[in-house]
Length: 404
Image (cartoon, rainbow, N blue to C red; front, top):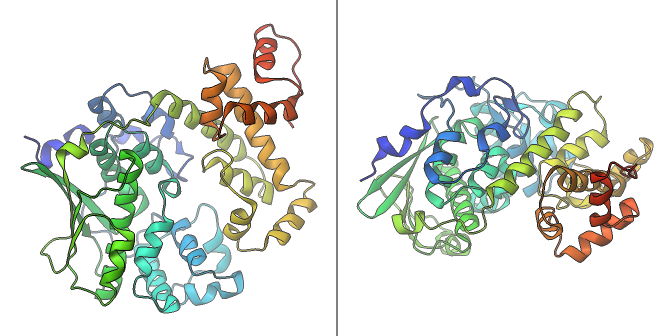
């Protein structure tokens, strides 16, 4: 029988993991590819994702919450740069600091921003909407860890382990009770009723989004227990959450059948994830020494998302500017969105071709192409050779055409 103690004993603190840089999440620590590796079973996976967790209630002055979450709040509110002061009111943060790629917020900053966002939205259900925007891809290393886990149980254990690096205002506890896994969420800072309800809505949507990603379907077996009373917008919960929902409970929990938690993640290919992470980290490392530019910011954004998935509209919105303004700024740097995207994708493609034995179809899937034919056409446009020809030339050490 598992309990709260042995669910986490394989995730014991390991301060020696905090030695290099976590390029994928922009926080001090070890390169995530070193912790992910290739997992053959759940226990190996649990041991590999171990890291130090912060215990006790965080002080209001502590930092550690990536500002990208608050930038997503601004995007959900459809704010422009000139409107950001209304979101930052009372935080003491300037716009430049808020938009900084690697800036970290204190819990007090985050709570104030969320309170301002609730007022600006005028919608009590804002937390549910925000949760839907926070897809697994927005969580950096925690997203990679959870989505590549062997099953839902180890995905949740990875979230429990990495959560302090992403959201120090909440802790996740896991405990098996009879035939169910109880996921209990505890807030670590004082919150008023509206903010606590909003954060609870957001966190439960995020957890269930992870669960759906791993299992491959909505978790209709879930039982969700909120501590807040039934809100006026209670009828909207079914639009965002599967399963049974209860209000006014003693504890804020998500209960899942253990059988569901142990279903294998059929879509997880750990070796492919390892290759993808290794490649992204290598390319991100090169960018650390580049002087700040819109090209560099765009490349970092592309490398932090699934290959080819970042649209020009989304990139411009993330930088709080119009698509036309982004195009103009890139032109001033003698570049363009398509040129940068082609550079990233072509370098990823030749890395897979030359450094792995993956089939062309597997590489196409890893790079988010719908089929091998589309990938082959793109590759021929980049290099004037088919992927097979390029791999043969690389093996024979012939001179190869440069990446675009």
